Image (cartoon, rainbow, N blue to C red; front, side):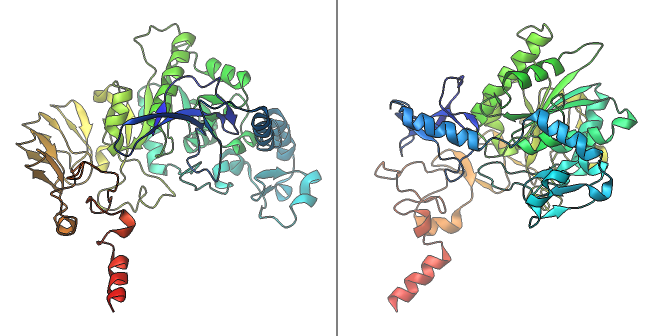
Length: 460
């Protein structure tokens, strides 16, 4: 399916704001013409079940039902009420300051009877109030609001780089750890102010409306409507040599087309706030997997993927234990590459020919006339394809391109290579995504050891 990128203000809404419009594809990859509305933030219908065909009438009964669901999912307090509660909480002696992890709530004296059987954090310090992510129960549903936080090394690199480039205002979309870091360093006058935008409403308890707004990146939805949008537009005004940059770290399964559409809207806000021309773009740092480079560049051609490997604290594959290849997450930016300096003490170097910083394994190819390695071992050049490819790839003379070597599974699937796109009969609806053969599904693939075992038992 494909998201249809356009303004969704008039679309029906779910608890995550206006829904996006999608169009389904048939099994052979063509558009079916069937369009529907669904939640912009959740890919799991068990979390947000909104679904409605575009061509069907939206009945009043269903509309009223979803109004009730939206109301029931709102935070228990407004942003202003949360701010007043925090002010009262800060007046308490530390021994009486408690946070309920079960309810995600700072506990006042009047609340204590409601949290007796809950998971409580005692003796909450002012330092913890500045870094609420340490108090939260981390959301971990990869099909909804999964939270993965930057490592200290990544935070220090990003902030020190932007400081050297004289940026002073940071709009942080889904980047709470940098916001917390900057707030904890306010007394040191490090020269930054930041505005956090995140779909997690729990941050409202800890940051004022001038510092935070609940926001859905996928549909450009401000949950506090005009008030939050006004705060953002005021924040991005550049005066007295101030410089704004936008940083975003969306879910890796997020819809790139929808994100790109929103970024263009945010760029318009910045242009209008600072009387910029249509040719000028707000500086941007987008943290996303390297293998989605082509889709990102296709939507926003000004962006360039840098080689820096972004580490996360609480992600097995993207953290310090990511293996020899390191994290696959990169930074896509429109900041000029010669000044986007990567740390040499971490193995990065400057390529004079490409005029950019690259990783140690990313060697310059004379034939391609650029540094070509994206991830893992140094890429090799294929003269037939006239480009560099991964070491694990082999050239397929039948399909005239390099593909992953699947020789071990080809004996079973009977196909030439992974790049086969249709079966001999022209029907690719019954394709196996394990061995890339046809005639069976992944769950029935002969490569699967459990299926082989079952077949042996059946023969007996």
